[in-house]
Image (tube, rainbow over all chains, first blue to last red; front, side, top):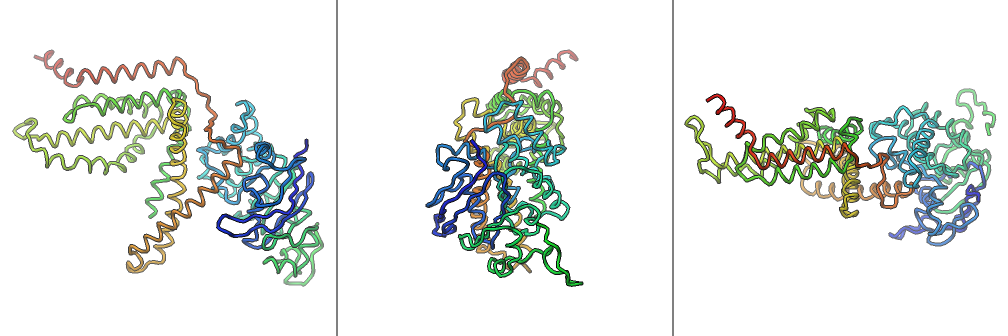
Length: 255
Length: 270
């Protein structure tokens, strides 16, 4: 059974306090796709992401992961299949050491200890953070924390990686390292972000969300040139696509 | 304000210490937990004027400190930090209890002072033992041991989260107090209403963050069971450790060794 497909059908979600955040979201993301979710602050991006692994349950509408709808009975498999990287690594790293943190997921999956160790090592090596394995997470730099947060999800070997603002608060070099790392992943990727330049590098497809609805779903290269659409969602054309401020020349499309 | 922040990062240092790999670190957490609990029970069981018989008990925390490769100054600082509590408990004893307990070179020492000293000594011993226990075991492992020893799971989990969220709470508090103090001039804005709303916000923010951390744990398959890498195994080392220390505690409880030693030396000299 392939878990790599994510499908949402007419998702609606209202928080208990009455705030209606999702108002009918539908999309289908297939195996190996890399999709960006963009939109203004408060458009519903983070809420949508929390639906994808069943943390939040839609008021109405369905989510399908792979071949089966997301139900209470298969939550466990879905949690393993869909790895969610949170926006703030401080929320994600809560164990005493980096090693324990990365081992948290695999241990909860009930894997044998030797397998857990192998996975932790492999995940930390993938993100280039094995040397940090015995450090307490709160002593790491922002870039290191982010790398470890990604490793905590990788160690569960998910089929789908869902990331909330992975490049926020990173210095330019750490950001570049992250982009190269993500580009190397063969997982289905869903990335919510305001970093449109990163999307140009990573995602061929983009969903634009405004007030809980999808207002555009198409090729990143086209959406990023639609200034009217971007402006209506509090976004701006990424700098790399804008004309050069000195000579006025327009860059060649990179996607 | 930086001070408070510093103290709490300092508590996080406990986990770093617990990550070491010495013979006492390798012992099964249950063995250390049981031994330390018996230690505390025995120390607390002495009479209110007892000082000298308590002295040998210092060997247990000192042993953990040395064998566990823990920095003495750090643990002492931690004990000092919580000592106002014990001082407050005993500070009125010298005033309330004026009966002469003994005479030292013409100076009368009242029962109040002796019981105060006893409280301070007991406090140092028990808190010191508890701290060294956490520093050679790790808080998670202590909670895990409680769970395995049959304490209600609910209780063990509460403790675990209390510890985790302590850092979260302090982080939020430090940030809010910093933000406030940057906008306070000549003591204005330091009134009780400002503090009330500060506390209210702190609670709400902490709840929010706790919610996010919980969701992160949930996403990684947390189901209410604590799991750690180190497998628990009760072997010979654990039995030797427990039997050795517990029999020492019992012996020290039954025989006042400093007095006995003093008498023996006096007899030998005399």
